[in-house]
Length: 251
Length: 248
Image 1 (cartoon, each protein chain N blue to C red):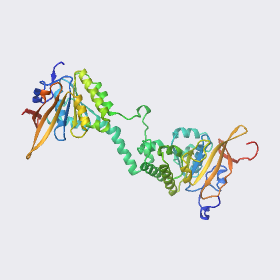
Image 2 (cartoon, rainbow over the protein chains, first blue to last red):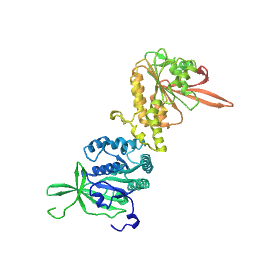
Image 3 (tube, chains in turn orange, red):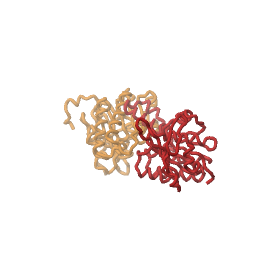
Image 4 (spheres, rainbow over the protein chains, first blue to last red):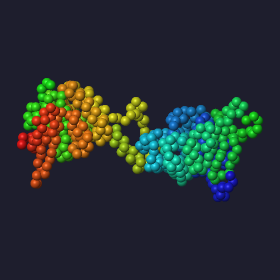
């Protein structure tokens, strides 16, 4: 993946703060990239993305978590036990949680299927929030749930392109969480998301000698060289730890 | 039937059955400017003192209804149920707010100030149900004014409105109350106009014709249940005392 333009190598990086991941990415996510974090359920997508935001907030970068399916109250309760989490970040407003259903409600996006105009409305509203709060890191958990309301490939493409552009123009590094079934042969439910994103991080489960391991693999990342090896991901109270997956043995 | 009650216009009472039999449902129709809403208020005033008058308003505010009655020198001791206001509060105000967020952008405080509607209230209000429920709770002797059916025909299926009208008619008939509904003429399909007219017992149409440099007003008794011989055209005058009629 060293075929990127030379100038892109100089791009400013957004340190994820996650042990191992910044090394895999050769110094972090190129700032302003929109990354698809994809995997089946239980693979650690939400935890990892939260940790990405918390590290940003600790470093003074305002971070926004947009929760589509789970209420942010419940989410914060789940994340409190982690060592890396500090409640003061929320109080100070450096780490902000927003429930997407409230955004929908406020904008009158109540129909089951969004129109192209609705897509624009939603992108504009998210842009407003990013501007108002000077957000530098953003997570949408999950983009798949938003896509359910978009239905057609055309609208999904429009949404991902526009949201990616809106966020990147604002210098905001974003993780779009995508849900796929464990057996899926692609990286996103609709196939459109993966083609448009600046990067794809695939998270999965791997059964080895009776244990179910969580794995992480950077499939694509524009603007940096990176390893494409599969890593084992360990969710510890101290946060996510990544170690290379040992090859060989009885797989 | 136990007697009759006044419709509010003496000559019209005479032309009908010396009043209207209790249990009857009346439709008043006409194009805008013919005095349909005024007719509704005059009808409401005629029941004060002998009947519990409930006025379901879909466009006017409570005070507009009562002020108009006051201007014509009528009593105003009626209960106004304001469906229009409820519609504004539950639907239109929300739409206005949404258009503001869409135009001016969404702010964090708008998100923080959002109060979720409790799950048991998170349903769309059916104002047609609100209307029929409100009517079903009325205690006889009652007089109902529904001004106007247009609101319901605009927002709900025609068949649902007709079904609500049948419910209102049945309740009025059973309790020997009296009900009047207004509907604009020429706005809805013939099918719906005929449908409503078929349900009611009496249909009155107010008509305004141009006569040189003046308007000539007529009051058409278009339908009287079982009394086709009573259908006729009266001439009609509107002055500071309200609507009056005269045989031609």
